Amino acid sequence: MTRLTALAHGGGCGCKLSPAVLRELLSELPAGRAFPDLLVGIETADDAAVYRLSDEQAVVATTDFFMPIVDDPFDFGRIAAANALSDVYAMGGRPILALSILGMPLGKVTPETVRAILAGGAAICDAAGIPIAGGHSIDSPEPIYGLAVIGLVKPDHVLRNTGAQPGDALILGKALGVGVISAALKSGALEARRERELYAALVDSATRLNTVGQTLATVAGVHSLTDVTGFGLLGHALGICRGSAVGARLSFDAVPLLGGVAELARVPYRTGAASRNWASYGGEVSLAPALTEWQRDLLCDPQTSGGLLAAVAPEAAARVLDLFRAAGFDRAAKVGVIREGAPGIEVA
Image (cartoon, rainbow, N blue to C red; front, side):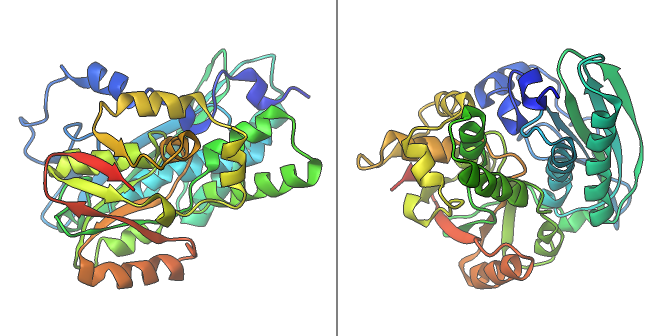
């Protein structure tokens, strides 16, 4: 049977265009100022669009899709669906329905494989308590799957990648390393038992729904929220800094890593997207001299269906960590602090 990952030039959120390329492509698009009820558009490259329907209700809309990060079609569907739903949770919203986005190379994948991908997506949506209400499919050179997701949120509960304040704690919900594990698995050089362990860690992390975002939207002191995906921890933290006109300090030693990822990164197993991400930060990130190249690459590692990243008032940090852990995110950790100054990140 043909491996799904062999049919694609990239996989998961590592397929995303680099932050610098995306900024260039979007730079001349018109702003949404003519639509006063468009609460969130493209202005700060946030996770989803938000449109106000009334004083009590707004619609959250997003779409996300990518090429396979794993060969198992059911797991591919699950990971892609969880990743798409995360954008609604990252806005503080509650998803209500999804539409499938499907592109398959006809003649290269079997109908059974496609059905398994769709079943995986449906399983995650069922876990989220929402239907897949339709979708669209095309014949494409590479396999692609994802969702368009619609959600609801109260306008005064919308969380954005803006609003972070000096002194805020930066809290990360999931451990890093999905990209590194993917690269290691694709190498074909791992011992069988190690391969099984790493695969299980990747799938467990990437299919864990970020539903805690809905709760964080109701907590006083949560000032900003995003999810960490293809641009890596540094890229998405930089998005908060740019959107909020602040800087940040991160501690590498405080960043949680999936089991065995540090050892893999030293080999080195790394993705091309990590290098593209680093080149895209535009000199706004400075690393302590003691940090090595493998540590830098982990901070740039593209996360597929990664964790939420919250900027939280100091007095709310303990409660937010408790909420993450109560929701099953036992590796949630404070990884840094927001500081005054021009947008940028210092990593110690």
